Image (cartoon, rainbow, N blue to C red):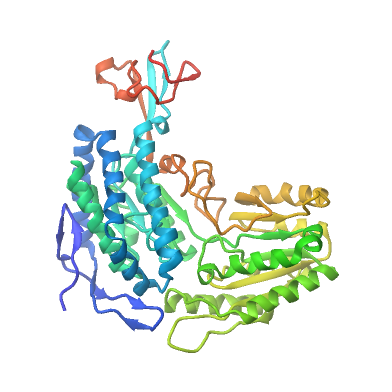
Length: 528
């Protein structure tokens, strides 16, 4: 059977000397799908890098904010024209439900991200243009001197796809070509998105090599890609093991790489909250832990509470939810193996299984909804291994003796994307909240109060990032525009450069009348 083509250098073509081939597997049946995709080798990598460098040069002379914004808007329209095809293919490759997850939630989020990125391009304030008229020194954020390589994850086939998701949109909006390295879990979905993106490129007048796609590589080829001198930066969403290997390769070469890797998203339940509305919170917690079969990077993996009669009733209710509901389908066999291994690690470190703890037999990849429990004393003796991430419908309850021990547990947490604190509605937990928040704030990117962390709103103030090992750098976000653009930008400074030679954003006249610029220490939308 012929291999599906890759998108390289402005054309769909056969892979050059592929290292092998693969096919997607339907997680609901464990049956391989018929289409075969190439595993790209060094020859493909060299071709995409050469083409991307040409696109960088073309963009310097002919790129414009209008063309970039037009591409992003047109891409959103092209996706919407392919909704039925995209949803049907993603269902086969991921077993995620068509409704509401794929069609009504994730796909609209994807097109919304693209349109928000287009609006950020038109506005231009993300450039942070800074002008000192006295010295005639001017600076702004602008494109990198190379393409951005985007590695997509398996759990969001649209919204985090390497060729359509948030990293892609941010890199393009910052003016960079993108080399998309698709996830092997959903190659057909990625191919359809790439076809839509390529149609939008052709309609926008941007360089045809602005977007390129390879489906899969051997690990050593991927390491070479993120460390190649010709790239500008890389973005990765996936496992901690793979992320750290890519980071080490990129760091050795001095190449920026932005990672989203591992997070257990601790939830602290204060005594007053459990006493006041424990039944409501238990329902919310189960729903958050089981959403998408627990395959969200913001799933609550650890829940910390104080030992008392109310917490015991809460645990029984939560145990009932976990034990009585049918678990969702996992994305692949590797995910099933990983969850089982993580649960074994938690058990070996003293965690007791309250319900679940086993792979579900049958024609699909599934792991039982699993709830474990460990004492606060035991957690403090084994804090590292008891923070093992189980990427599935699994959560660990940590039962502390008192608020002081809850705070001690917070102090032992690694960096996370999120941390939540549930408190009494009439502020009876204020003192306890203050103690926990003081420690937890520095451990997480997004702090929530009386809310589960699984929802990630695509709004300008969102931080989908956090301290290591949740990400590779605590100062950046993968969601939220225009802030997400800053990862893929360089600071361009101009000293005594004549007006007509400056980029429009730094000339005396405001290029669109709406861009905010820092002029002699004051933010302004006015001309100089």
